[in-house]
Image 1 (cartoon, rainbow, N blue to C red):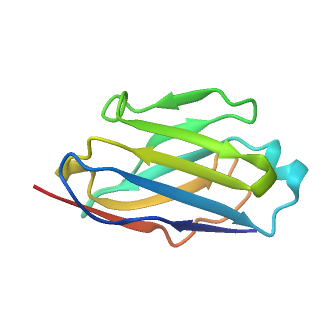
Image 2 (cartoon, helix red, strand yellow):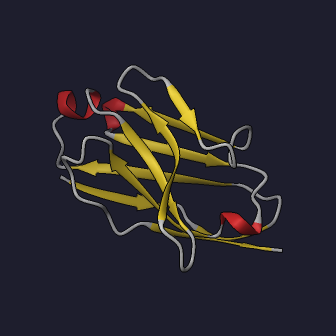
Length: 116
């Protein structure tokens, strides 16, 4: 299975982006049973969890993004999304989606740059 992230770009502070992640090659039932998450790696820093969604649809967020980001999934398409609103310069970095039980490798990520 290959995780393929997309949707990043350059946006001004206060703007929005929607990131997408496709679990390419996954079996529908396997994807549907997986807990997924989005991670953020700021320049020069370690990768950090920003949002997670269980197979049942329960969500959790880092304090820094609560009220601004929304994670969702569409199992029929093997997709995970991250809606990012009210973006801040500190949201700049590479965003990765990941399967929480480590059964799939990291993808290449998608770059988000927020200008002030």
